Structure formats: structure tokens, C-alpha cells
Length: 304
Image (cartoon, rainbow, N blue to C red; front, side):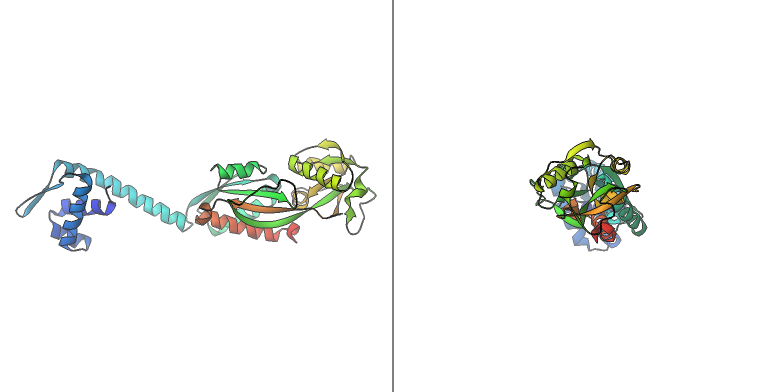
């Protein structure tokens, strides 16, 4: 295997014409230059220099290697500078995947802070709900995935192979029309009090959690409308077409007009986290992104 330090010595010998002159140029001794040249010749398996008295000339193989050495060393220098820039957060790229309510609440705050602190770091954003976002991370299609799981939910995902950065705990709240009988309720409401209502359900995972919670309270919700679009959920509730249960973070991602939020008992919470792979967690740009997401989560009203 050819080492870059040996190529640098070869170039110095070729340009100066002797081991001693190359040593002075490189800041090392003549024996050190001779030893490295022997190591290089052993690596390539052929002589690179012909010594005739005090003169020294390159063999054909030596000339070929010197010709390529300039490009190789320039490429290595450029690579070293680029890696140093990434390590120093003067450059770098992070591929982020988030679920929609995280994209509109946590992500903007985090990325604005990241850009202010490290303007050379670029972040791309894609949207996907878990478990798809977690699959993208494990398959190498992103560097950081925002995900969530409900406390005590059956079949909760296992993240033991990932680095888990907790961001906040998000409580589910009920949405009712402004004129609803429970709209002015102080304190929490038992979800069973909504058993006879028409329901508007959210995303598939939230829908499954809704049914599970309602069945735990002794009833099956009558779902008249289902949509992945949170503004649509709020709009349907505001029009008096039913009630809904959404995570607080999802409510904060839209402007809830014509609706009231009501705390629920028993409390239902979801854990929101940022996930990455163990090796990626050591990359400075990824680590900085995780830090800013954690700060953004701590500032969310849903976390208080």
C-alpha cells in the first residue's frame, strides 16, 4: 500500500536530486529519507531510483509515480481540509426526517438556531411518520429521525439499537366546538363523557391510539371523518361536525379557530424523540442538530 508521506518524500527527492537535500526540504534527516524511500520501493515492488555515484535519477516507474503523486497529494490535501471543515462545523450536511407536527413546531426553531451558530452546515428535511421515519434511518436514507411513541401502547417500537435523544412529552387533548357543552369546563374531562359524540380521527397511528384509549374507557368511538391533515381536523371540529383528540403539539402547529381544547383523564401522552445511529451521533453536525432539537423541545408549551 502506498502511503502519502512516502509520496511526499519521493517528490522531494525528485525535485532536489538527493536524499540530503530532500531531508533539508522536509525537515528530517538523510537516513530518514533513505528509509522511507526503501519502504516505498518495497510497497510498489520495483526500484524507483537509480543511484550512480553522487547522481540520482528516477526509473520509469519512479517517473510514473511522481507524475501521479502531485494529483494524489493535492486530492488528499483537499480531503483533509474538507474533513477539518466538517469536524469544525464550518461545513457538513444533515438529512432530517420528521413527522408533520414536528416539522412545523420543533424543526423551524432548531434549524434557525443551528444556521445562526453554524452557517456552513446544511440540513435537508423530508416528512415521514414513524415507523417509516425510523426505517429510513436504519436503511441509511437519513441521519436524524424525529419519532414518537405512546406511553403504554401495545407493540411500542424498540429503539435499543439507536441513540435516543428525548425532546418532550406531548399530552393528548380533546378538541370540541366552541359551543359544546364541555367547552368551558375547568380541569380535565373523562374521555368517557365523549362516548356518544361523533369523532374526527387524525393520522393512522393517532387513530389507533384513539380507539385503544376509548375502548379502555368502555366504548368504541364512532368515527365519521378521518384525515391526516391537522387543519382539516380542526376545521371539522370548528364546524360542529364532531370532536377529536390530538396531541398538544399538533394543535400548536395550526391556528385552532372555532374550537376549544379540553384536558383529558386519564392522561394520554406520547414521547417525542430524535433518533440517530450510534456512529452518526459522533458526527459534529449531527450532534449539533440533536442539541438544537432538544433546546427547541424544552421551549415548547407542550413540554411544560
